[in-house]
Length: 107
Length: 239
Image 1 (tube, chains in turn purple, brown):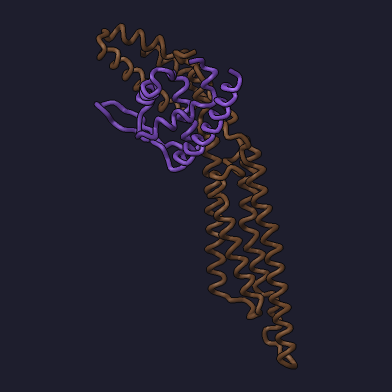
Image 2 (image 1 turned 60 degrees about the vertical axis):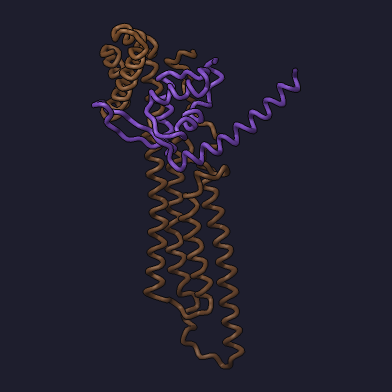
């Protein structure tokens, strides 16, 4: 998928992926790829800044964990994150509905 | 991998020691996880490491994205917002204590003043809590001026009711021990006090609520999309 098409939706995608449960950065990248049937393959330079930004906005929280002797930063949704995701979902439906109507009308 | 992490570490200088350590630990975990995945699919460690580091992306670009996304300024804004809420709650507590200790005037208008005080404090304490959830306000704008105005002006607004309430508590107190010539005069005087207190409180409440709402509205981020849009595709295979 063209990177330009993803612009502005990364945060929503990350929030949606975190809704299924806490995850570290790499797991999120894999989850996004798997759940989107390989359509969204995000790079490190996209996912981590998004996670840090969402944490700065209070939509996501994180903590260090120890797994197999390795330090891992695990992220999870906050209540504000859940609310923001619900709002973004609504916005997306409106946007997608409008775009579909437009494209169907053009065809 | 170590060479890549060393380069990333150099590029992450602006994040500060703590931020850099965190970003590096996350990058290391990410790389190791990716390598382990490749190995599990049958690749040798050396091949997997080469592939994973190759698709990791340019350390300079990744570092730039992380620096842009650093949450420090937003954390300061959040702390500031919480300070404003704490200030409003502290003002509410102070008012409650003050009203409890000293009842002020026995004038008939005192009840209206108290109702005004309690409603106003609840409004001032509650508005910042809903500010981030309502589309009309939203989180504070991405500039220092917006943060300063929201924290400073709202903080000042939280202190103002203390002054107003302290003054209004004794409004009409000089007539507390006044002996009226007849009951009609007294009733008339009390009605005037109540009318003045109610209308004054309503006007003041509307003005302060508008001012508080105005501060939150002016200083909020307009677009639901953050001003700093993510650098989509940096280091991404989809680029």
